Image 1 (cartoon, helix red, strand yellow):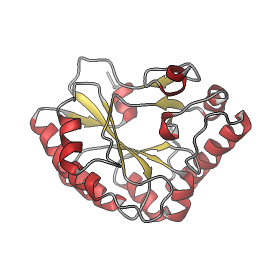
Image 2 (cartoon, rainbow, N blue to C red):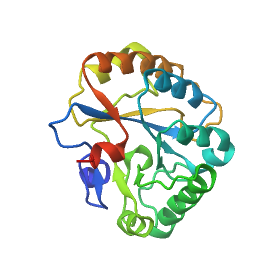
Image 3 (cartoon, rainbow, N blue to C red):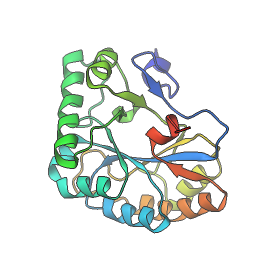
Length: 218
């Protein structure tokens, strides 16, 4: 049961991906828990290196920072659905699950003009009702193959954790927020991104959105 709920490769509760097939030197950099006032600093780094990312946004955060949510899309990045209030969905009812993702989907679409294709459950916890919700909203789950633990590690450790493990097809999970905190201190994440992106570019990796990575054009 634990694997079904939190296993990164589990699709027990609904369609989900956690990495792309190997064979291409492409990776997806993803950020959870935004948008926040710190998100533009990450956008600046990505713009400097001309790389794309996917931002799994919390609906309530989008309502608090609509201009920043729009800036993510304007910069050419993909948005994903990370629920409306970032709850732990274990033991919750299907109608609660559906409502959380519907509200976030509406907020993201209304304020960015982009409709998410992928969702990521807070804490990676999925439960009964996810499959129904995903079918209703046209969402595919997106887990990760590398998680930076950037909410608790210093920048140097985050960089080592990511760069030392990357292979083609990986989905990397970092955070541009800390849950639903409005004023998040994500300095370690920002510094890590400043070092991770050029390091992986030098190794020959190409950054793509989750949609591009999972469904590459022929």
